[in-house]
Length: 270
Image 1 (cartoon, rainbow, N blue to C red):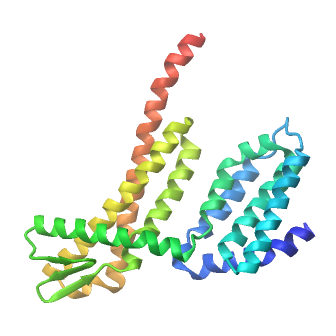
Image 2 (image 1 turned 90 degrees about the vertical axis):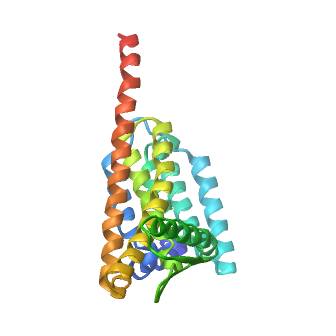
Image 3 (image 1 turned 180 degrees about the vertical axis):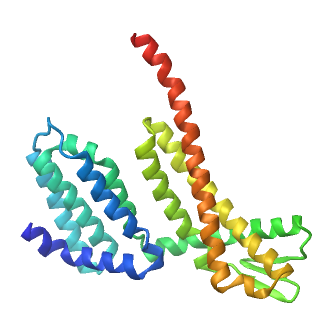
C-alpha cells in the first residue's frame, strides 16, 4: 500500500482535481464512487485464488508505464498505469476470476479517466460539423432562413458558433458511461450490452443536433439571449435527460428481448 501510494498517489491526486475542476472530466465524480460501491457490493468470490505471476507481471507493466509517462510528462499514461496497477494488485490477491467479477467497476474507472487533449480535439471537430449540419437542416425544415459555413450557422442578424464545448463530446462521453453502467446492471448478454453502448453514440449525436436546432429556433423567433447563459445551459441539461430516457428505453427493450431468448433455453433445460 505504501509503494502504491508513493508511485501512483500523485497521478490519482491530479485526476481527482481534474474531476472537480474540468467540466469535460466531471463525470468521474459519479463514476469512481459508483465503481467502488459496485466492487464492494460484489465482494470477493468464495473460490477466488491468488494469481501471483499474473498479478506480478501486471504490476511490473504498470510501473514501467508509470515511469515512461513520468519521463514524457504524459498524464494520461500515468493515470492508466495507476488503474493497471490496481488490477494487478487485485489479481495478485484474488486471481483472474475476481477481475472478471469486477469487470464493471474497472470499466467505469477506465471511463472516468479523461482522454488526452489531442484525442478530444480530433473527435470534437467532426462532431461540431455534424451538429452544425444537422441543426441547420432542421432549421430549414422549420422555414428558418439559414446559411451554414463550417461550424457557423448564420441567421438573419445573428450568428451561431458551434464551438468545441458544444460539439456534444461531453454528453456523448457521459452517455457511453451510462450505457456501460446500465448494461452491466440490467442486461445479461454481452451482445445486448454492446448494442446498448453502440446506440448511445447516435442518440448523443442526434440530441446534440436537436440542441443546436432549438438554440437557433429560439434565437430567431424569441430572443438572441436564448442562445447563451442560463437558458442555454438549462436546455442542454433537459435534452441530456431526454437522451438518458431514450437510453433507458432501449435497455428496457433489450431486457424484453433477453427474456424471450431465455424462455426457450429454460424450457429445453426442463
